[in-house]
Image (cartoon, rainbow, N blue to C red; front, side, top):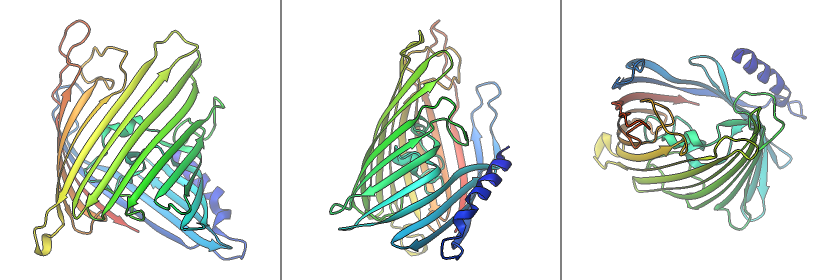
Length: 363
């Protein structure tokens, strides 16, 4: 099914590859691979996850051309493992505004512009994996998003989006409701810096987002409202970032109790000034994070995905060509904040994990 969806999407986009002047849109093909080795404590039955795997295998294609003061583009990103799945697939139009301003509109399947962690590429991370807080943000969605860099204050970006809200590769808006997303981003330093973690480029970014979605779940309606804030900074090899997200789940027409989800993450890293060949190629990093996906329902089984946890992660990275070619090692200690079930039984599990991953990106 996913193969047919990707093929159909490429066919649908093919008219965009030929412009009005009869010329073909120049397209750059690339992608990245992330083989990984994982070792994890297996105190939960069926949780044996040790061994090798291809964490990600991505294929990308991007095309862009300027026509009559408007830049047109096509972006495609496909996941190849464990099955072929369309991730990004959208057409774009953008241009310049007076006083260093600009605008851009994307239409198709894109990342909802809510949080910095969610917008980051999986190939541009300071750690092997993103923080758990990203699971509280909207995934890729089908719809449209727009970004305006304000004239006269080009370090301020406004994002907005309207989506079906059904999730990735759900080609119909079944409940006919929409997901609304907004984000304000201020970048007083390094406004043109690439969206990536680590201390390679000096930058300061402060942002905040909000989402609103009404979901028809058959027996009634669920109203989901999210609020979040994030900050990121890097200076001469030292980097730090933090993010906070609150999600309200309300059931105005149902007996089901309302609940909230929340999470936060903070991390820091340092590119070691070792000199010579290794100068600013080795980075040490650390992250602490906490997540609670449901504050109303007790957890009774060890390993329940709704269990509130806190993660402590240490990382060591070698960047041979920055994020294009790197090897990363992380170790995470997981602490269960909810330690007992409602009957007083222990639900603490041993599930610390060590990950080793190589990333090679070519575009």
